[in-house]
Image (cartoon, rainbow, N blue to C red; front, side):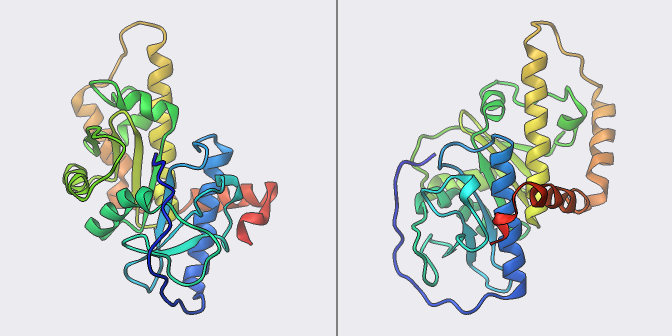
Amino acid sequence: MSFAHSPTGRIAESGPLSEAEQQTRIDLAAAYRLAALNGWDDLIYTHISASVPGEPGHFLINPFGLAFDEVCASNLVKIDIAGNIVGASEHAVNATGFALHAAVHAARDDAFCVMHLHNTAGVAVSAQPAGLLPASQHALRFYGQLAYHDYEGLAFTPAEGERLVAHLADKPAMLLRNHGTLTLGCTVAEAYVLMATLLKACEIQIQAQTCDAPLIVPSDAVAARTAEQLYDGGAIEGALEWPALLRKLDRLDRTYRA
């Protein structure tokens, strides 16, 4: 969370939308609406960012001040890596909030979409010394594939960005201690489905711990084999789930496409 309502610096020119950018806007707006539908939002804070296809160094992010269920394809704001608005926009963005995303986008070629949330279960598990336990099939997706970054305070500095991406390394997900969750994907769908899986794993762990009894976990060998099976040779996650999720949104409210 950042409480700095940061207007951006320069405003550069931006051309007409490509078909690829329009589709990315629709997918990103859908991710915001789905997050709101699931109760993953935190007032107007946290962000999901996506690269603009064909425009290296340009990204899409939510307008700062709007709730997640108000985001639509047309009001997403295009920014550069420094958080400056590209083209005309009636909305400001939270440039300080984007700084975490910018660090990941810059460090990872596969970080087309970066999703960061303050979901209650995710924050709760991040505060546990052992972090995410291999206590469910959902958690096993992240066996050996989950990074951790210790809390350093509210202000996100370039130096912390370097430490965060070093801790992230080549992993697809991270628990930010005392703060929240982060996933990245080569598509919006992949980042979203990874987040859904991670949060489900955290929710299962928190609920299982309420019985105040030891948790049964599989052996390291079973956990490693299951993680490899779930990794599925590096297949892009979300390819099958995303169309179904969009159909669900379309049945409820198609305004995210506007």
